[in-house]
Picture: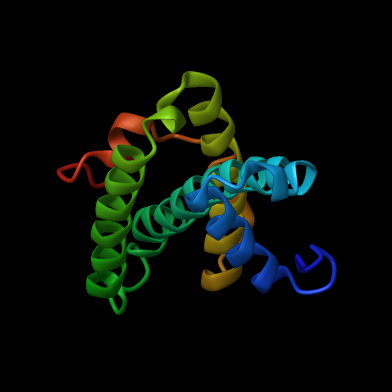
Length: 147
């Protein structure tokens, strides 16, 4: 007897995986499987936008706040490097995310969230931050680019 999707999600996932491996397609919960596979793709999109947001927030902090203090510069630069590597790996593992529509959407979301993060973390007047994204995707991913 199969475990219900709503009853115990973890056990349901393990059973569905086992049915797939065994070729027991008659036992698959196709409706919920299709929903979960779609959600995995959305999760990949969210991960891309989140990493872009963190990267953008730290680039903005470097750009706007360094005039005032150099206290956190090393930490911010390390975060930028880490996010750039993670973004590169993420795009290599999921090349479908390089689709211009996907990249544009992720960059727009990443910009909005990253700008908000930078404003909140620095406490600096929001008017000092650019309204529109000054960074191209190429600049964001370029390990040699610094604002």
